[in-house]
Length: 105
Image (cartoon, rainbow, N blue to C red; front, side, top):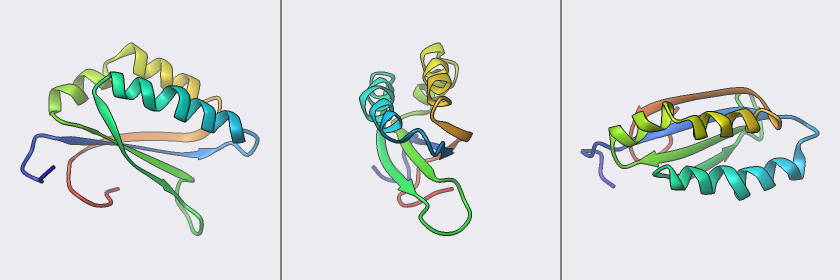
């Protein structure tokens, strides 16, 4: 994907609840990511903050065009997924940015 496209990145950041552990991973890998794919997004990156300040996790999804991303943020399925994710995380935030290769915040 080049930087001239209409693509967008969805940046999700949050802290994991200490007790979430295996249930968190099962939910994210077994439900969250596959459902996001059915909504037209592709998981591109996953980051973990090992040292310093910042969210524990950042997940990055890519949509090929603006309309896919606009549809997502209004989608009830996506809102329901995030409600389920909140069982395992705190400080949940997201933002949409224009696609650029490499790490973005």
